[in-house]
Image (cartoon, rainbow, N blue to C red):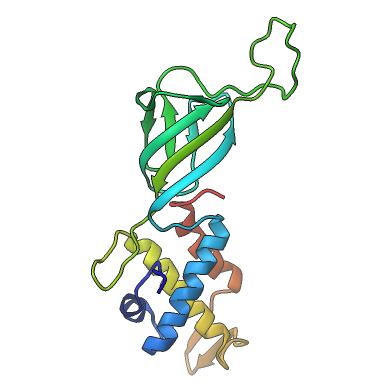
Length: 196
């Protein structure tokens, strides 16, 4: 059975709706797939390989966050020393110099050295440890809360109240947030952890 970004019991506790275990499991699968499709990579702890080009900066941002360990880095096919790089939770940083960005052309007889982009192959271990029955994992709680909000939004959209914009009882009126406002809240939390 595949690990999910949030456990069913956590989703039931965080959700404002009354979910059954089976529905919570289904929504946990949907949320895991949705976030992985949005980011373009599995967020579960494990190895990853990315191919990037130089950007004339000292840092390269990687997709599978948090970055746990740099395994290897090759620049133009040449293996680099890992001690020449600092590993942050979302990027690697070259201690000296930068990742060179050229013009994408090849004129070997010219004196300019960086006409071609540096081609960078990075192998690393990254991602979150997903919760399981044996352990809690380390997926941040605000990310789990964003998932619970996404599930509540899906539950509301599939209910008979989905078309309701506002209502009033005596002197008290209620207005629901628009789909865009709800999506912006979820996206704001996700942007803290991923780049896309």
